Image (cartoon, rainbow, N blue to C red):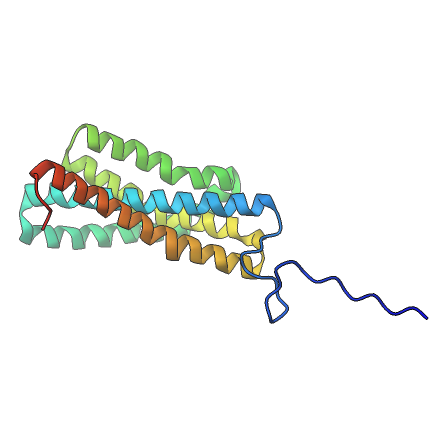
Length: 193
C-alpha cells in the first residue's frame, strides 16, 4: 500500500499557512518594490528640500506673519488642483500614455523646476517647484504606485506599501533634514537651532 504524498509546503510560510509578506515570488516583483521604495525615498528627500526653499523665499519676501497666510492659501489652491487633476486628467493620461509615462511625470517635472529654482533662486520658481511636487505627487505618483502594487498579491502588496509609506517616505524626509542641517552648519559654522 502506498501512502499519499504530503502536499509541498509553500516557501516562507507563516504560521497561519499564508505566504510570508516579504516572500515575493519572483525577481521582477522584488525589483519593482525596490524601485518604488527608491523613488519614494528620493521623492520625500526632494520634497523636504523644496519645502525649505519655498519657506525661505517666502520669509524673505513677506516676513513670518504673512508667510502663514500665504501658505494656507497656496495649500488650498494646490489641493483644488489635485482634486481637479484626479477628476479630469489622471485617468485619461494613464489610459492613453500608460503607467511608465505617468510615473515619470512627477520626477521629471520636479527635477526641471527645482533645478531651475536652485540655479536661479526666485520665489516664483520655488512656488512652481512646490506646486509641481504636490500636484504630481498626489495624483500621478501615488496613483501610479498603487497601480504598480496591484500584481503583487494581497500580503506582498501590504508589505510593499509599508516599506514605501512607512519606511522610505520618513527616511527621505530625515535625509533631507540632515542635508539642510549640514548645509546650515557649513554655512554658519555652527549648529542650526
